[in-house]
Amino acid sequence: MVVKEQKKQQVEIKETPKSVAMKPGFYLVATPIGNLRDITFRALDVLSSVDLVVCEDTRVTGKLMNAYGFKKKMQVYNDHSTDHQREYLIQCAAEGQSIAVLSDAGTPLVSDPGYKLVRGAVEQNLYVTSIPGPNAALPALQLSGLPTDQFSFLGFLPPKTTARQNTLKKWEAAPGSLIIYETGPRLLDSLQDMRQTLGNREAAVMRELTKMYEEVQRGKLSDLIVHYTKIGAPKGEIVVVLGQAVAEIVSTESIEKQIKSALEKMSVRDAAEMVAQATGKPKKTIYTLTLKLASDRKSDRK
Ligand code: SAM
Image (cartoon, rainbow, N blue to C red; front, side):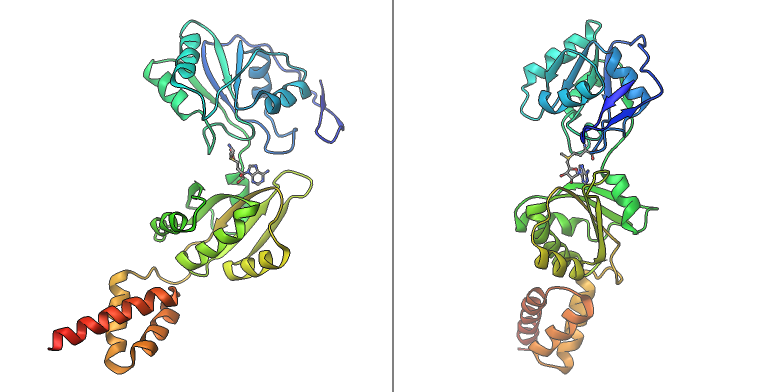
């Protein structure tokens, strides 16, 4: 079988997709995140055999199908699809159709549509199976050089700073590495929020994985901030991986204790400065807390 790659190279795949008998139901098929050769033989078998291909965008999936020479009925299903459209697909599966579910790239349902469809199918006791394959989070974790034994996947963070910082705070004490999907234009702001909220952790930025300009930048968050301030917003698709908290996780109680003890010996300004340095917390936050604790202390003494 000859496959047209994006760069117009011809690549040969020795194995020919098998037309296999398909059970009615949903087949969640992972597709390449950049390099068209990253597709499993099983994914090709399924794509050549299903009755219907459901995808986010028929232009994107159409390119993939053309590259492999598959001509299939395609239907759009994405985050804008209505309940009615979802129910229709579930009905098709219930009536005997085999349906491949694809996203634009990678694993469907991972920061991509499909969850509600699977949920609906499961509720109807329909057959649902996964055809595993590419995704961006795990290769990024592998390349980050950060611990891989435990990790949390955060998906995309909110676009606005306050919401983003609030989300990050919830993960402050999570054990292991944190995997975050990002976009070039938001990367710098996001790295700054990570630095401010989670401290100066080890981190890595993986860009354009599996593609021609694949790139990895590793360092402390502060190093990455300097780098991206210098070069500007990077192009392409990005995953950020953060290492675990550098120092021991500092609880609010322990910060207050440190401030109270510092206030015994020094001014508000010096106490705040010292505790901010010791904990890696933002100076402004610590200064506000120190002011409050100093004023509580005064009232207690009255
Ligand atoms: N379902 C996909 C998966 O399994 O990884 C994720 C889809 S999500 C809409 C798209 C995000 O995934 C991008 O913004 C980026 O964070 C990440 N991503 C996808 N392809 C990538 C690539 N080739 N290199 C780096 N990150 C990628």
